[in-house]
Image (cartoon, rainbow, N blue to C red; front, top):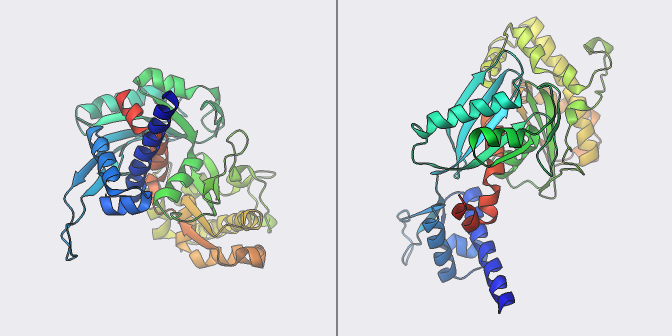
Length: 393
């Protein structure tokens, strides 16, 4: 009897997870579409939807008017009142946001800093932001946890930040430190890995089984790889550090950092310098470059960085054979200012067969990508076992 009860409970948990995951990733879906997608019968889907409503995880609403014969099916949607806090600490700013279970940013705050913040400082800032938001923008919301997108090597097993050189973090237990400051469950991941997760689930890589993603931020260049629909993590969770590869610079005159790595040559700081900005968020830098890209010094720097980036992308295409390459952050700006030039340079250096059909895209989620990816970390336990996760909070 115990075995049969455990089996039923296990099936029930998986079915709850399946329905919630479908509406989280796919948006509002009718019960009829959920029935088709899950392979469950209509009464079971209705019962699961009702339980998820009771748990506060989904909302059911009347269907949109339709001319189809028969009674239309109610629509099930993720409840935006269920919220995750997403955090992206960088050398120049800490960005904190609240993300609903519908994958939408509810509130965002960028706190600029004069020096790389410590993990303790990050925890204090996040705790302060949550306290303010609970009495304002997030009043009445159910915060399920915090996800941190860290620009560095994050150990998959326990979230220990092994090395985040630009933040000057080495073996930092940031999960514990932020958890102590906020009293909330905390998950930690590499920022670029979370960026590719967000783009794969909700953005430019949606529905793509083989893709390469490179993220350009204040701390350099990171990346992520999806193979056969699954994120490639590596043995310790450190896969995707494209920025640490040695660049193949075809013209010696283009070299700026002798013996440096890719992120030393293709760098946000160099773009800020050439437009005369000390600091800027992504939209501000993109706008400055777009308005002045035809000035000789700026055009030369853009062309130099684009050429070196093209070699790195050609190497990735040759090794990984993706169907889509996605670029985020300042790397997206390099593409958008001259997409034909970058595509031509990549194609000229990649193997012809590997390059066939490859699309180079910019991150569809823009500056939200890392935050939405970080929120996915916090939502993971809720999506996996909705009833247990919500009743324990």
